[in-house]
Each structure stands twice: as C-alpha cells, then as structure tokens.
Image (cartoon, rainbow, N blue to C red; front, side):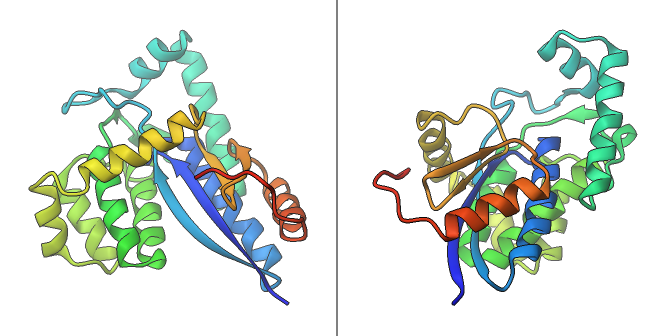
Length: 224
C-alpha cells in the first residue's frame, strides 16, 4: 500500500542551498516511488527581507554578511557548483551578480499553490534557474511574468497580483508562522508537520527519513 506524506519546503528563491536541497529531495522522491507519495508545498522565507529594490552586489553582500574574504566567497561558490551538479542543478555562479528582494516571487508562489501543486513546483524551479543559472532578478516583474507563462499560469492574473498587494498579508503570515516555530535558516524541510530536516542534505538522508517516517506511528505534536 502506498503511503502519503506532506512536505513543507521552507525556502527562499535566492538561497543556493535551497536549490541543492530541492534537487536532492527530488532524487530521493524518485527512489521511494511508488511506495511513498508526497504532497509538496513550498513555503516562504526571506533571507534578506529588508533588501532595497536595487539589490546589492552578490560578492560584497556575502562578504559583509558572513565576514569572509572574496576568495572564500568564490571557493564556496565552487563547492556549491559541485554539489549542484550532483543533484542535477547547473549553477552559473559568475552570472549571479546581485542579490535581490524576493517578496513578489513569494507572493506569486503563494498564488501558484492555489492553482495546483504542479504549477507551484514548476514556478519554484523556474525561479531557481532564472536566478542561479541565468543571473536574472527575481524581483523584476517582466522576468516574473515570463516565468509564470512558462509554468503554465495565467499571465494577466499574475500581472494583477504584482500590480497590487494581493497575497502580501498571507505571505507574511506564513513567514511568521515558520519563524515563530523556530525556522531561522533554510532550506527547512518539514515532513507531516512534525519532522524537520535542515539544509541541502544528500538524497540518502531524505530517502532514509521518508522511509522511516512513512512506517512510523503518528506523533502526538505537530507544527500547526
């Protein structure tokens, strides 16, 4: 009999380890299918909620945030490139010139979830690729609308959302839900609202957790 699990993938579209984590999770899901089916939901988290509209230079931003040298930033980028390749994500570190505000992207992801899980997944992956492979801004409305079309969503409806504050309150409320529950770094992968896996783990870690949880008795507490 097939087991069904819910996964809430808390992440930011400007988080490189979130792209790695999603690729790793997808490999794990392929390994456990068809024994385990998953209902996947992407939840918002902003690494830089106060980021100005013009963004910041990517290298300078990371240097200031973590107190490391430019050489260390570039070395970390090479490690990311290697980890991404292992899970099928081809980072182009040189194209990621700036760090941007991602709130509008999260509003569209909230809407995409209402349209269906496949649409949300397609938009999420398109956002990762646009930023980390093509070096595009996830705050640029023209870029967002193009990605919406590619995900099979309605461009006119998306434009209406971007021109308004629609889904802003809902998105911020969801962000608060997870930060108040103790999520302060991403990716945070929450299975059945109770089991947390942090970081861009290897596929084996996700596979083992999914198999164990699918066979475990329900817990008495959950993330509401």
